Amino acid sequence: MKAELFSTALAAGNGLIIIDPIELPAAHQTDLESLGRVARIVITNANHARNAATFAHSYSAPIFAPPELRGELRSHNLHDGLAIGPLRVIRIQGAADGEFALYHADDGGTLIMGDALINFDPHGFTLLPRKYCTNQKQMVRSLRKLLDLDFSRIFFAHGNPIMIRAREQLESLLDS
Image (cartoon, rainbow, N blue to C red; front, side, top):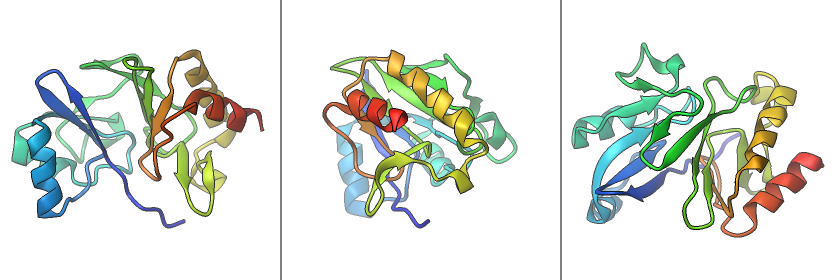
């Protein structure tokens, strides 16, 4: 499956948290920098190192990454329950190696996903296909714990965000 890459920038305090950074054209890099200082970089799974090292070097920003990337990147290890500024880290077992979701409680709540959930044509909002999961049933069980959170939006590493009623849509997906 070929999927377009997405990255998320979150304004937090005096800086930005960049999640799963991708290479940006110069004009978009300038736009990003106009939003604030890149203060932290978070990688949501072992397959998403992408441009993290370049961002870290350019902005002198620390990287928070799955332990599976310890040998590849100089980073702080993600673990379930870790707080990175306003973000809470949630382990998603059974998806891609080292999969984590990020939760921001403010303003109706936001989830930021790595690979466990995708939202792009022609598939729409769906689960990571079984062939890419370490254990899809375990992943679904892990995703169910996200329903304990209050959120209205989901941002994806692969696909367009869901900006309204995201929790309800996730519940419907997991019940199907």
